[in-house]
Length: 394
Image 1: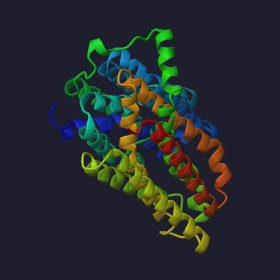
Image 2: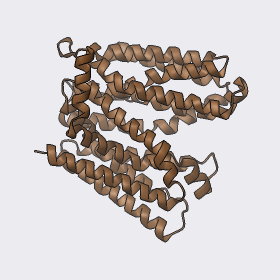
Image 3: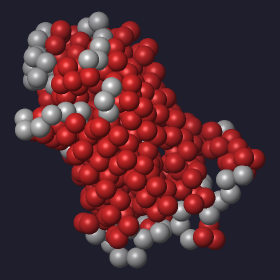
Image 4: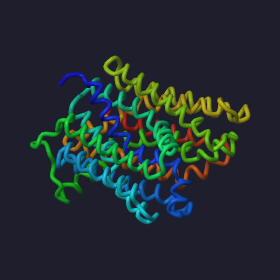
């Protein structure tokens, strides 16, 4: 097949950002939703929590369904359900109905993230696959910043319902794009059974594989060093740095820049250097960012912009290695690439949940303790990577 086109890259990116967009776009509308539906702050928080719980649950299954039914069938069905769920949210007359709609959104929004990785590996291998997944990562980096800006722009002209109408239209547009522009990449003869015994054995094979656990652990722990800041954002930005509630771009902006730069360099290195060296370089950059973070917090008072500069460096290093590690996971199970992608997503979701519920509250007491948490996650990711290399590098 020819080199990936810009259109394919943009479509796969759009499929990947459906999940994050469904979280970030409606956040500026919380006060409007509360006023319109008479909802309490706890109920509003549940619209996020229930969505994430449903998203995490289905992340484990989208790939297995795509291995059995084909990539297009799962994407089209999920996008149709997502568009309907978004419209349901837009028309919800009560907070309880909105909660139900958010659960349906969560059940369908993650398919693009999981299946797009399998599509990339179905279509390409080696440097071309590496470059495409890195280019998708570059475009994906803009999602967390663009989503709340889009939500705020919509609120400037319409009521909160319009945000969910926008998400419904996004689902319809992507459904049409997949229908007309994305070919089926998994031939019928390569599809796998959904029989419970066969499926159970496949999940057991993946989650009992030391090679998978090492690669998935490296990705999840590496991202953990950033997530501990994301989950501690109000404490870190407002309490420790004195930033206003409207100044969260101080965290997400540097992270986006780091993600863009790391994926760009990763794509440039594809085919020019051994993949091990690319990941090793990523760890060197992460180590530099973590060391600078510790030094600044030990020797100087926490202040902008220096408090966020190490985050950009650290995320640059993370993004250098993720394309290689993700492709390596799918190459471990060539007959079950979708399921392997699902399991990778489930591992990352588990670490995210642990950071949000346990780790972040333990370390958000000071900027120094957050820097220590970043360093600990880096160490865990490096150990996981080294154990994996010991077993898999030829």
